[in-house]
Image: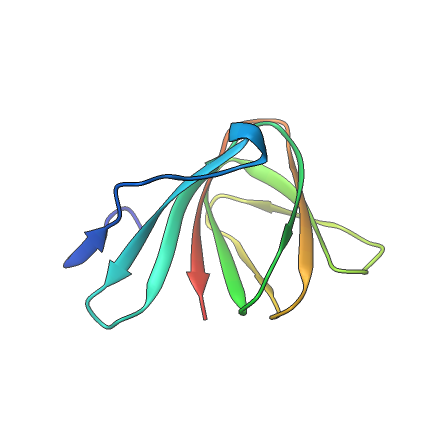
Length: 103
């Protein structure tokens, strides 16, 4: 997905982990919300309240969901899902662009 039509963009950035992850929220015409963001090189752990689907739009990362001992690699064009009330660890050695879909 290279662009969205008929959306509202919240101009205040969401900044996490001392600036290692920055995103902006978009509100779609159907009422759904997404965030468009960038993660800078490093390893970060996120907690989820609602189910999420992370779509990688540029770059490569390794992801470990919750207590799963194994990790999976994802690259541009791929996505992974995280259940509600869970967590995931994401590691990247390059700038990673993503869209987070709240499901």
